[in-house]
Length: 461
Image (cartoon, rainbow, N blue to C red; front, side, top):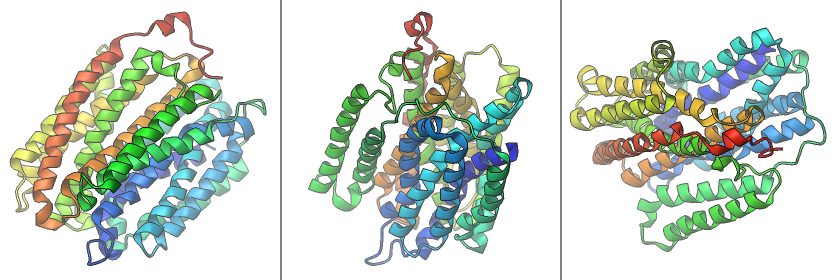
């Protein structure tokens, strides 16, 4: 049972990093940047569509699992994820791949929240803390191993980035069906706001569309303005829907918890910068320095590998330092990493002296910031709200990822190779600036909300 639930969480987390490394190879194979073919901005939806769908469905699927059973939702999500992975591997064009990535993200959104619920319910109290730590460590392990795994698989073919999920998923499915017991809150659990999920996904999707296509369409074109205006309108409708529904994706009362509100804002801004920095670095190595996917995977692996190490050391050596200060410190360190890349990166490969120092700073900064953002986000919530609260913080992380990728392609447009060089540098400047915003936002997480003292047990039911 532990293998099934933890393995599924690891597999879904690994997907992000292996696809990032394979991004350039996927584009070349599917005809991106050829005359009349899809643009690099179109290809960005392979990443963005996954993140938007995952963010929008994470909370609703968690609520559906409470209503109809965690094991059912977990098995269904795992089956959808594995099946969609096979269809991704067989995709013959960009938009077919994007469509199956949406399906894959829906499966991940179904199995991720339910896996932790199953784990907690099935184990005795004395084993739960260790099990939760193991479950939570999957993201860090995926970050550490993902780039290398992605590079090795892409060296064979980018199709294997998705095909590798089939044998692993088949084993996990067998374990889930035979060893996982069902857990649910009963049929009286409220129906989630599925219309709100659609509105939320639509608003973020239109924002990403307007940003990524701004260079192709022009900032003053009707299509760009229409997409951005549509994002604003759908956001307003989503907010109104959230106030009216009894079980919304983001309950307005939760946002009155000050530390939770500021933690989500910090998570959003930090991940806008992190996503743009990560993909810009990968594309620089491949498009300007001419690295293969395998070499790129090994080149960037050292940064993510520092994330769990830094998180563990900071927890052990700095236990009395408030999370807000560690988030601020991590944001500053990441910003310094961006400034190093702006200052040192040249057209000729010089990995050790130019790329590596900035990338190491980035890994240390992420290790300081991300774990503490999650901790600060749920600190002041009532015990029965922490699961939903952590899901919303995860949503903020995914939306930051979408916006960061969109801004990257808004800056570089459809340029490839040396033509995109100045755009990558501008992206690192942008990321450094956004990280300074995250530094200024993070102190808000230290202020406790009055709702903590009064109790907020009626916020979510």
